[in-house]
Length: 351
Ligand code: PMP
Image 1 (cartoon, helix red, strand yellow):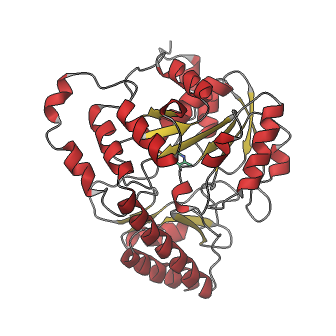
Image 2: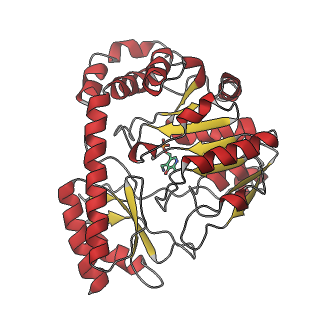
């Protein structure tokens, strides 16, 4: 007799990239930020241990105010959670459970996992030949979820297309969920559209742009009614998803806009130089508005290239699905790390 539920038995969980323990790598496999968080984070955390006796502010009031101020919204339009993964999970429960959901076939691979967990009928629309999102294809269903810029392609959909998708979902009485995990590295984002429409939910993370992957903080932006629905789900699961340290760290990080802008510019610069160097060496690289590049490692399967890099102490991500198999996803590290990985990629791929 199995003890676990039918659901637990049937789940196909998300598989995250490797977090090595015994060896130092140039770690470009999970889209972390190569730089330290803002020095204000350490200052904000100092002396916080004594406060841990008490439960945290379940509404993360100060953090939500800081986010609202930075984005130009009100705190009622902001929801915070334990990493954007949790925020996405709450959104799936709040807006998609029991419904049919449409998404691109190649996108963040956690979406189908949440779909299974929350009883969502998950429909996919193939990316176009050039790996861009097929907006007309997505317009056949509602609600819709997509990452913009998309992962793991790195390609950004123009804002006009996000507006078109939101309008279509609104006609169907559904929301559009846009995962902006990487929007800090993109020339545009969808926050401005929140003034025009009440059915857009934007999810973001502190993991990439604010170098806080280890702290687990994500947030959603949307109409207060959508935020209320998220809160109802949260309070049916865990009223305190963000601890005191996480709230303090994220607040300090988002208010240090000057530091974030400087680090983000460094990452964008390293990204664009890397893409140019690889392209000049005859290696195909998709255009990216993120902190990673999708690099063609082989005609058919880049797994051997990934292994060769690993032996040289460089970790990158490889996806085994059919269309992604020839590619490697390379997170943007420091300028120096990118010079090393560029040399290694050219040597291994071009022999
Ligand atoms: N969305 C996308 C598209 C991602 O790539 C990631 C990172 N794996 C996340 C969400 C989750 O980020 P986190 O939970 O660290 O906020």
